[in-house]
Amino acid sequence: MSRHFDDIQLGSIELFCLASENGSFTAAAHVAGVTPAAVSRSIFRLEERLGSRLFVRTTRSIRLTEPGRVFYEQCRQALTQLMEAQQEVMGSQTKPSGRLRISLPTTYGHHRILPLLPKFRELYPDVTVDIHLGNRNIDFVAEGYDLAIRVRTQPDSAMIARLLEDAKLVVVATPDYLSRAGIPESLNDLSAHECIQFELPSSGKRISWLFDVDGKEREIFADGGYCCSDDVLGGVTLAKHGAGLFQTYKFIVESELANGSLVEVLQPYSGRSRPYTLLYPHGRYIPQRVRAFVEFLLQYRTQWAGT
Image 1 (tube, rainbow, N blue to C red):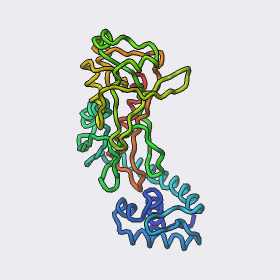
Image 2 (spheres, rainbow, N blue to C red; image 1 turned 90 degrees about the horizontal axis):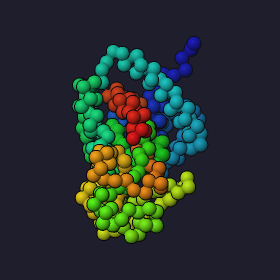
Image 3 (cartoon, helix red, strand yellow; image 1 turned 60 degrees about the horizontal axis):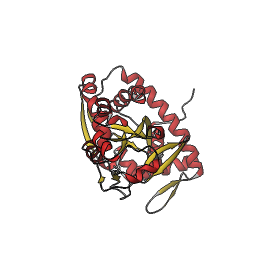
Image 4 (cartoon, rainbow, N blue to C red; image 1 turned 135 degrees about the vertical axis):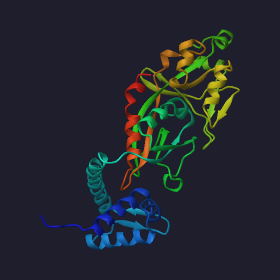
């Protein structure tokens, strides 16, 4: 079999894929550890060889042409297969190590991920874990994160997305509050209750409560005298101290529901959920510490699906 590619061509294809996924030559250069000029030159050589423009360039952005999109899809698949083959060979010879930077939502971090990290480090003691707890959007490239977990993410070609769970929603209150205010039997009863609200810090919009009515999702913007923002655990704390009703994820209040300090209401209308997704960037090389953490978390999906 004769040779069809040299190292320069393969490198140019990698940089082309990085530019496609990151939306600019500068971002691709940052990921690859080269200069933006080197990325530009490599892609220009690739276009000359192919005899086709791969990008529409403006002063602020780049956009794949139709031939560029087709070429990207095929190249990404091929590079992924090459990396998987290489890592399968290397994986038997080296152990995951280095610094793992993770961005977690406060709620999911406290109740799902942080309790698992000691077990992860028992398995991989050479990996150090740097955790950021917060609900803002992050810039993977600029801030140097390896992974993030987010709720209700939008599709992004620059990211690999793995669903961790559809987290079930429940409406809860204390027995004391319910004895004072009564137990709501229907969604119309919510107007007569103190409904604790949560406000998104990024937009200032209040989160709707989700219910299942005859198999269809129904949104309700309930009202009340309490509104928390940034950290949804504030609403849980208010509910635990008798302030009113609050819709939250079941995994947060499982122990309180079990011991009776909180009670679930409106159960005939439950069944809605929100998805939590593990995100990490496409790249020419996914470090073993990242792969190890992804595989470690995915093994809990069946367990979480039952809660």
